[in-house]
Length: 124
Image (cartoon, rainbow, N blue to C red):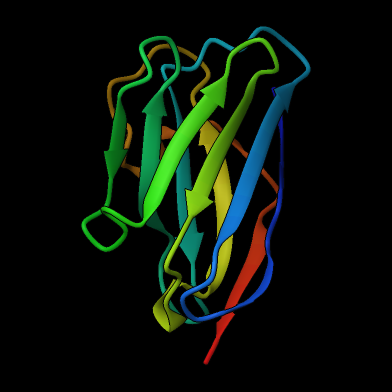
């Protein structure tokens, strides 16, 4: 499975961006599509995840109420709508998927496939 993330960019604080992640290459069997981010000098951290079949969503406390996940199963594409962006949201954002069914949606090392990352920069 290959994951292609897009949609990053430069935005002022309070603004919005929508990230997309499209899976291709083989049957998408992942339980979740996860989103993580990594700021300079920091570890990669969980942002949000969506259960691919049922659509349940999970968010880190830091983005709860500001970020919203959705997915288009037919297009094998997930979306991360980011509103009210803050300076501390600046990071490279990655989408991720499991190879098989996996209940761990918020752990970096549980994911098998990663997108290339897309830069999100929030300015004051």
